[in-house]
Amino acid sequence: MKITLTRVCLREIRLPLREPFRISSGVTEHRRILLLELRDSEGAVAWSECAAGEKPNYSPETIDTAWLAIREWLAPRLLGRELDDPNQVFPLLDSDIRGHRMAKAALEMGVWALFATHREISLARLLGGVHRSVATGISLGIQDTPEALVERAISAQREGYRKIKLKIAPGADLQFVAAVRQALGPEALLMADANSAYRLKDADHLAQLDRFGLMMIEQPLAWDDLVRHATLQRRLATPICLDESITSPEQAEDMVNLGSGKIVNIKPGRVGGLRQAKAIHDVCQRHGVPVWCGGMLESGIGRAYNVALASLPNFVIPGDLSPSARYWERDIVFPEWTMDGEGMVPVPWHEPGIGVQVDLDRVDDLTLRSETLGS
Ligand code: OSB
Ligand code: MG
Image (cartoon, rainbow, N blue to C red; front, side):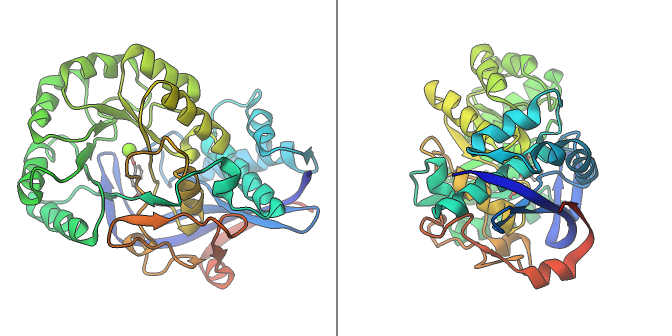
């Protein structure tokens, strides 16, 4: 089966979060989200989402750089070209175009969904998924006080989340983690994410987290570092999990060889799409490194791709795949994403494509700008 992409429509929507989400490098109160609507020569349509944020405080990309990259360099490579396998897309987009992985991913993932739609199977099955539901954790933003964080952690535990991740930063770390550990008890699956807020000179300070029995500490050092993380890992009992630093299967291999971390958070948006995400999954699986699927506060569209990816076998740690209601008053898909009382999110298995419908009226209402490429 072959697919020819004829049109890509870019849209920016604005979606307010239920509550501000603070990480060490900045705060988000409402999401500006870049959505793509891909159409092929048979008239099939797939929606995808770009993981980039409004500011370059997680990666160098933003929704504005992604818009430019897609319009100027990436979409022109795909429009009108016959494709017979979604695995062709990443190499096509990556050759002689450096970086812009989130922009590449938005297009690439949409093409995967088009193939799934044409083959009348779910994206999870097209990817080779095995899990019919995925275990889910929650990522709690930095709060003003340990008490405020404890309150949120307790409700999360009650709701059934299988892992609780605390965002940390210098000044909001030891006391906050201690308070949550104390409140939730020794068995609770807890971890911390620093989003690159520390330096190697903070190693002794970070080693004080060891006494809280965290599952892992995510990305303590610089967003593009592997070497210093390896030094830090040798000084910590807590496993390091890398997020920002792993942008390709080669980086994952380097992590293993250098000892920079023991766990990987895979986000398809960060790494250039589903082919790359699967390749990282495979490298980790070969080396006995467990992985989990992270999130970027996606709408229900981006979430569909994350959930499908998390159905692959080596996703053995609960992901940041919270249900729609954790983020939004109302999502832009139906059905909305839900989680049961055991912290499991069902993987759409029988519906062709991404498994959720886009609420077109709502997307129209939320649209701030749009642009159509192709015919
Ligand atoms: O580092 O994982 C991160 C959100 C925005 C930017 C970076 C990160 C996050 C999260 C949110 O932790 C996870 C989610 O989508 O629930
Ligand atoms: Mg992270």
